[in-house]
Image 1 (cartoon, rainbow, N blue to C red):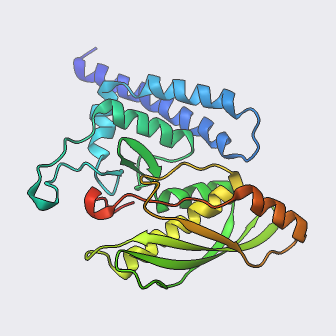
Image 2: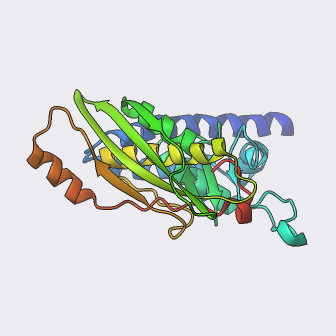
Image 3: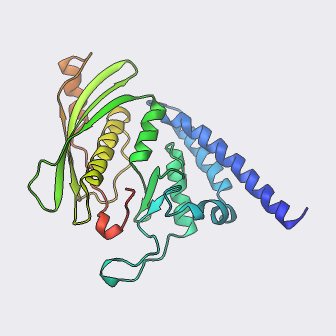
Amino acid sequence: MSTQETGLSVIDESKKKFELACKDAASLQIVNNFGAAFTAVNVIALLREALTDEVMNKVFMPLMNTKVGFLTDRNGRPRSGGRPALPVYSVPVVRDAIIDAVSIGLLPTGNQFNIIAERMYPTKEGYTALLRRLGVKYFIDVSYDKSQNGNFVEIPCKINYEYNGEKNSFGIVATVKKDEYSSPDQLRGKAERRAKKALYEYITGCDFGEADENSGTVDIKHEEVVNKTEEEIANKANSGGTIDFGEADEKKQNNPGF
């Protein structure tokens, strides 16, 4: 067998393991799945077998810092103020991020996650994919800035959804950092991401964190609920508390996809 054929067989074998891991990870998206820990162990083991250094360099590293793949806060370009570029992320960092992403149902294509400060964070596209896998039907009404602050905007969002026959509605006020480069569409897009994140967390109880816990918060205000008693609503709201939706500083991180 030639060297080229050997290389192809290795890639093909890794591809099979990767696809199997993705299929197994899909079962982890089921809310209240008590066998999830066992499945997660198998998914991670398969991914570590599949994502060898050779496979990472040939298949996944070229996807880094592309819209087709995934964006990071280290894109190899000089930083603001004439500072030199930071080195792009290494294979081990990207591999761990891909494992984290796939384990929760995200793919390393379509900008479904970003890597910020060496950690994986779902994007707006990522939360769209996660909600779709859960079968959630929803409508998000993103309003406009209500603040008078020059450093951030406060954008109200109204979320109406239906899941497993249960209809619900609640509102959030997304606080999003802005700078001289921020457009209204970009800011509203970030607010939409936070609304989808709030909806996913509200349904599943899963919080995948944020790149900067101090850069913004969202206040959840329940407004109108269908097919629920007041006591049920109060219990669910009290158990959730306030969710932090801080994000990476776009100007510093130079990360347009997050």
